[in-house]
Amino acid sequence: MSHYNHSNPSTFILKGIPGLEASHFWIAFPFCIMYCIALLGNLTILLVIKSEPSLHLPMYYFLCMLAGIDLVLTTATVPKILSIFWFQSHRICFHCCVIQMFFIHGFSAVESGVLLAMAFDRYVAICKPLHYTNMLTNSVIAKIGLAAVVRGIGLMTPLTCLVSSLYYCRSNIIFHSYCEHMAVVKLACGDTTPNNIYGITAATFVVGSDSIFITVSYILILRAVMSLSSKEARLKSFGTCGSHVCVILVFFIPGLFSFYTQRWGQHIPTHLHILLADLYLLVPPMLNPIIYGMKTKQIWEHVPRLFC
Image (cartoon, rainbow, N blue to C red; front, side):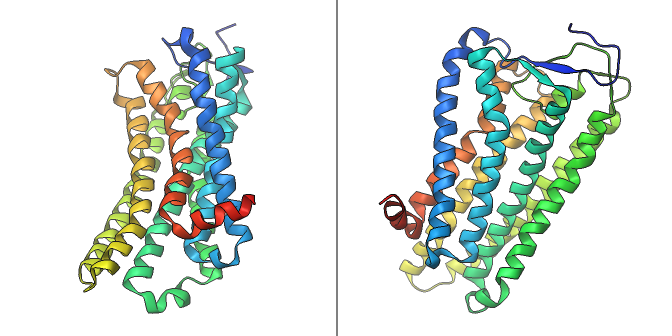
């Protein structure tokens, strides 16, 4: 059952966290708690911003996009991970695996684009405050969000098509908790060079370009903030940008570690790599609403009103 002689196996077997199978049942509890916090936090962000007209501003529209993407990322992966850990439901059909891979990598690229858009929003708000409302109109925000979606989905669609066209004749056991691109490609026979090159190129392009533009934005922001004469104004500006910087670091650092470890981290224990890859899809969606909810006074004030 673990070997196939045709190009499209009917099912794959997700191993979970190799080496920690005996602990799967207990690992699932913190995973479930983090998933519930992510769902509750991001849904709260969406409902608060939707119900409060004073929050219908560019910054909060981008935050809504971020919350929606986080809901998609976690829901596409965590329920299956929990079913593996608690109910030993290791099987996943080939097409479901490809779809899950598409959502994971595609929406991760979309989230990177939204974080870049949020950095641009902070740059305009601090460096060009008089032009803020004229530059970031509702139509411009919609176009920026659409561009992030088109870029992310457009880059990752060929990736999933390449995976679907591979010939699979080895074991159908994926040594991962979800259908990560390289974990699936390793099961294929024949030449997988196009998959490796395209995967590395797409990820490096997205993360590299977005990181450069985000860094440039914050250098300009820092220059503008340091030129402010009022200490109170400087602290307020740093506080506004601090939450966004935390979200960027939480998203990019674990993501890059997981991506490159899958390719060149042979000396890193497999269970450690897979565990960190799982947390990469859980921790940022859980922390994002907490960071913005605690750091953004306008949201924090309206949360009790929503539940009351």
